[in-house]
Length: 123
Image 1 (cartoon, rainbow, N blue to C red):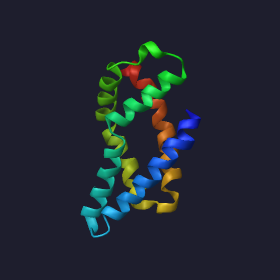
Image 2: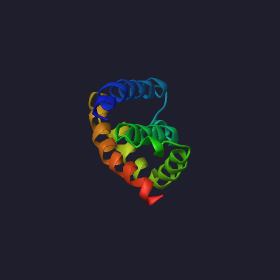
Image 3: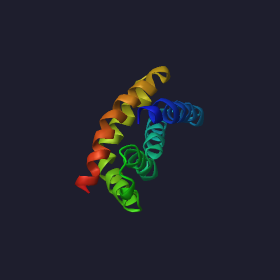
Image 4: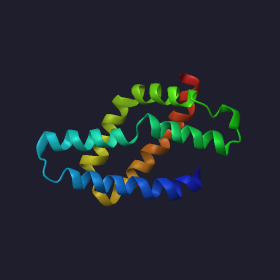
């Protein structure tokens, strides 16, 4: 998982955050805030969560657990997570400078990775 975080996620997430800034340059006020927050939440969607669960199963050697059920778990996990994710992504996208967003997101993602790993038990 460290390798995935250091390569795939380290490439994807900062580029997506740069794209959010680019796409919202003409917005102001509440519309800017809500758009940036919503776009960040949209990135960490059920498919992203399912991919994360897939990597957990793959690297733990639990290949039999890789199935469509991971997507169902990811959907429930995403829905239950929206209130927390909204607050965290609001702060990351609107209060933290772009240069520090990846680090802030990585810290939040590390906490969420624990939640995603537990979501299989919860859901």
